[in-house]
Image (cartoon, rainbow, N blue to C red; front, side):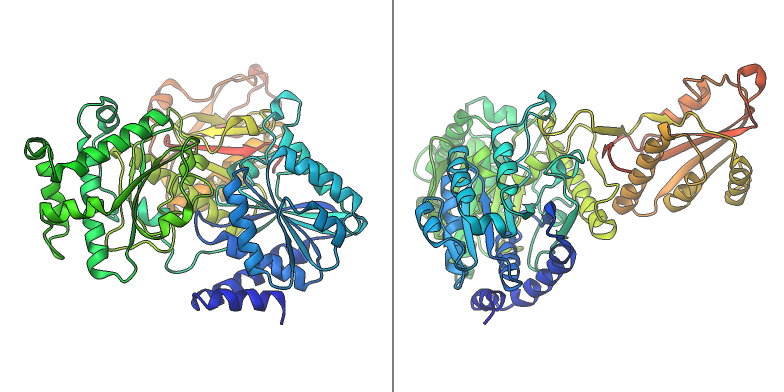
Length: 623
């Protein structure tokens, strides 16, 4: 039996519904990535899925297929977390029956066996471990002469060059470069759910993908389009002052108290109506360890209400408790005695660099998990049905915030699953969700070429230190952009096109027609990339909002100097600034007289403004 068939049979034994999805996805991987691998040098592919959507199973399937196709040399990289590397090694070891799987400590075994059969080495991204394996890999002749398939999990994190703007190379990135250049050829597969940093790499970066595979989650998956839809009712909005109340260190904030009451009701619901009695609650107050300790103190304070502090209960928390009782009234009415019982059954744990949690502990019973950065990449919390999130940032990073969304997944109970997030923060999450799914649709429909990434105003797609400042440009919504150095070659065509659209000086068209119009503009190379970025940004907006309306303003016979630095008149400038919620474009037909320094005939100059809420990031090497 082939490796792929054995693995899928292994998965189907636990979940038959996943068999078809795995087979379909691995066929797409073969068509989009493996069949296009030229076996010539290093080729980088993006392996794109959603947060907690089963990427590890997809990677094992893809690796099994590669082994069936004759590839023998594999490396799987995990983050620098010791426990995660161990979990990944164990999972691959148990899943791949006829493939040798080596732990990072088994160097001598690999040296002795060589590539007697298909072999997988599971390493964490730690400089000492990578350096020790580099020497070993160079000494094994079969490795150097065989094509390597390297799967880099969370490839947008530790693998990128954090010194790109210092004309230097960070350690992990340098060691990765060394590894992929040892064999005769390498297929470098970047596995991630947040590919923003990778897609914005300069063309000469190892981390810039040229191939891609996007796999869809199963039908039962709940992601950002479910939890962050303002109309879904999945979020119980907290006041924007919740964080300030949390930091006052007096009584437990009302929003946190409500989320605790809600979670304890969920425990009773699970206990009464579900066969698998597991229910978990994540509290993410911020980065600092002091905030984690404070959150634990607040939780314990509320848990103790059933035994003491009854005056505090009556004066302060009764309203929140009754609100939650009403939510569950169709199922039961919890008494204070029952509340105390489920508090007693619940374990409260902190996860950060000082304190850790065994992942197996979260697979049984009722658990409250409190933390910050440790509750991001790599941790999967089963049966997570309640999340309290108040972490604030001056400029949220899309990839970081998205990785905090541990509530995404398969085993969530749609009847009770809720988030507790302040209004303004939830608005940011909703906007990031729209941008995220828009990016996935764009990649799926149009591929990677000319890709533009949209980020809501006040956010950025990723951290700055991994992007080459000289290779990145962006268009900011609410700012006017115009083309210089336009010529008169197609003026007559533009005249006709505008008349075809409307005879009025002000009208609306859709994005598709605007892009058709912009294609008529002949400009010099210096402005070609700017026009391309406009068109890519419009394509992205169309993916997000549909073929939405564009406001068009026609202005004729404007007589300005050839070295113009601005085109809009004072009145038009006021007009365009009033319309910041949609796309606006002014089309000026300039006279271009000799007295103003022009040569040639009249020509059109476009001035465009994108919606104020969005920023569009583009790699300058594209287009």
